[in-house]
Length: 105
Image (cartoon, rainbow, N blue to C red; front, side, top):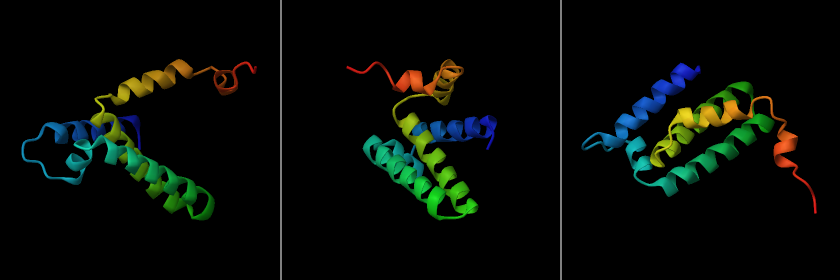
């Protein structure tokens, strides 16, 4: 999935948030950020399991589920995908060790 495909999916999810009388699964998740957050956690675990115990196609499928649910969660909290991409851009060239392994006391 390209960034363009993620942008299109995010736009579709955004439209669901404002659509009158929408009773879709996406809308139900958007209306309940707690449920949305739980789904992201559940899908994250499924991705981890697929990565170590299943085949490539299972990992691809579970990853798609995770991306979808993650985009729904972002939208439910009024956070644009571009904001996340900007945060990633700011981290480019920065060591993850430097960011996570601060000084010890």
